[in-house]
Structures are given as C-alpha cells and as structure tokens.
Length: 167
Image (cartoon, rainbow, N blue to C red; front, top):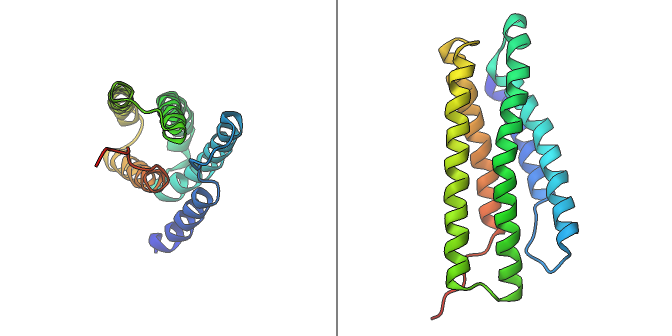
C-alpha cells in the first residue's frame, strides 16, 4: 500500500528534475545559478513530502523530527553548494575547452572533499536522529534519503558530459 503513495511522489520528483535540469549549454553563469537554485527549491519541497509520506512519524515524533530535519537539510545544502560550484567550474572549462590536467585533478579532489563532508554530516545526524526516533525509523529515513539522492545523482550524471581525453 505504501508503494502506491511513494511511486507517484517519486515520479513527480523525477519529472521536476528532468524539467529543470541544468545544461552545459553556453549560457551565463547567473542564469545557470538561478536555474539550479530554482531546481533545488522544488526538490526540497518534494523531498520533504516524500519523507513525510514514508517515515510514518507519530505526532510526538514529528515535533522533534522536523526541526532536526531542517537543520540536517541546511547542513547538507552547505555541502551541496560545494558540488554546485564544482559543476559550474567544470561546465565553464568544458564549454570553453580549457580543462587542464591540473584543473581536472583539482575538481576531482574537490568532489572527494564534498563526499567526505556529506558523509561526516550524515554520520553526525544519524546520531541525532537516533536520539529522537526508534532505530527502524532512522534507518527508513536514511533509506529514503539515499533513494532520493540516487535519483538526483542519476539525473546529474546524465547531464554532465565526461571529461574529454586525447585519443
């Protein structure tokens, strides 16, 4: 029964990402940045609805969960800001055909740092969520988070071309 509720929400979520997906076309950085911010705002609202529909919080749990969830999303957004900057930097180098080996490694190191920060943030918040929710609900929440991240990462991967290499 839960799948019936989740499937349409995920389809809405996915269609929103497909509709506003950032491109690597030659457009101004400000326009790209505005597009990304709009996409992120839409994703936040849909993400919250999907979490609410799937974690099955009681009223008592909800009172504690949502403020902590908002703190969690704020911290994750800080990490995601780093990823957006990396994507924008890669986009500029890709479009202008100026990506050097040194810059490519710098982007890779930046991405690894982003992943580390995101993992540290998640680990910190797992502990905090365990203080207010039963373990199965904590696990379920992070399962939902992981699935939503996978959808986003899949869509991003489709829109970001591979680094060009000499043949």
